[in-house]
Image (cartoon, rainbow, N blue to C red; front, side):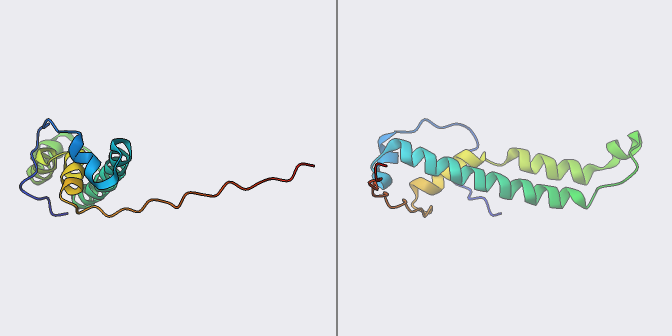
Length: 113
């Protein structure tokens, strides 16, 4: 997954009125951002696990743990990446997240028996 370089790795104070522009409701925007953050998190975890699977061994001894520098470097790289929530917020504010709202259901009149 390509991570944009303009996303801060640390927490940034946000103006809530920026989230209202897209949906008209802060809470709907936060729900959309949280679902996108979950998608990003799953994708990053799958990517990390596939890269670490190359180094998987069936025998666990102490010497192999200290000698596996490539695995440590891969893990450190993923630890330095911005959090999925920060990535999702940036995508949402830049208009890169597509979403659709479900159509409101018409209340049906039930027959009294």
